[in-house]
Length: 311
Image (tube, rainbow, N blue to C red; front, top):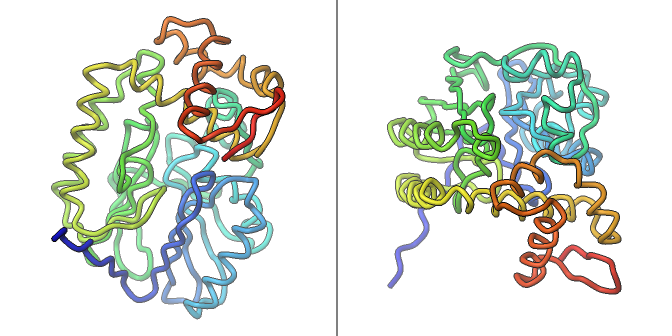
């Protein structure tokens, strides 16, 4: 008989909102003053839905307003709802300290939106989140940890009081995010390994990841992640293949259907595609064709009369 999945239990005043893979998950936490804090805000395509989901969850918590948004990192699927939430609630938006200048300049290359050919509505940052500092959320302290690996400027948040971790894209139940720095010859695997070790040493009963379901008893999940990371380190081309497929699939989640030639033109200048293609020793066009072919054979996309359809 297989072992039952350990139950996920959240403290009173905490709501975990699981999304699809286009938008990151969100965590809403009630504050003692009647306000609430939201961690991450999804992709811009779903910004109206984000506002609706937050309004509903505020009602469930008995909170009167959304007072601030905290971003674990500024990939487009984690901050695309920031502008809509600020317009609706007049809330503050706090971003990782390492990204605040990029936001103020709205440097779409530094923020990764050019490199991934993704979209994000411009927003203003009203404050910063500094690794090593403690931040009160929901009336209790949360520690902010730098979480490089997937993204050099990313953060995770840990509440020892509740034994709760918001892990962003460092750790999911079935993996972790693409290790983007390694695509351009920068260190990322080592940092990801160090993050897994850090998480394993924290007092954590429940993990609220950036994508996929929340999970309890994370040590077994961490061990699986270690094995996956080891396979990527042994053969970095696997990371490049993963990045190519993720990038194309992600864009198809956004557009749903598109002429294949139009999509190929859209991503041709994206640095993620070009870097991954170089690691595969393929021309950009061939790398695109390979990724589309793989996704089609896996049933994640469908090709018909020169068009691509998301499945």
